[in-house]
Image (cartoon, rainbow, N blue to C red; front, side, top):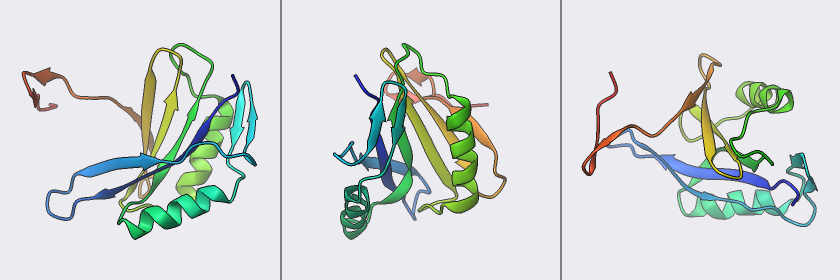
Length: 134
């Protein structure tokens, strides 16, 4: 299967400060796709962002797949992410980078102020509540 990818959209709740990712675009016909590469090229992604904005959901980052069980960012990914930190703006001060592998997905977040990128993970749960990270 060729790689897939697209944009992530969401919002920052002005009351709680929580960030939600609530949608994504999917590959379209004019995107560049191969076994180990994906590039957003189709103008339909921009139309997707326009429609999301009408629903108060805004650009928050990008996602793509890797043909690995547990995805590892390539040097191309890191270079693209660094460029994204220099050029893009989101609905908050962060930009999200998700890579879906065959068995699991991983997420990195870039801080648009400090230009640092770190991997994030779901917090451990205790019952239905998430434990505080210390």
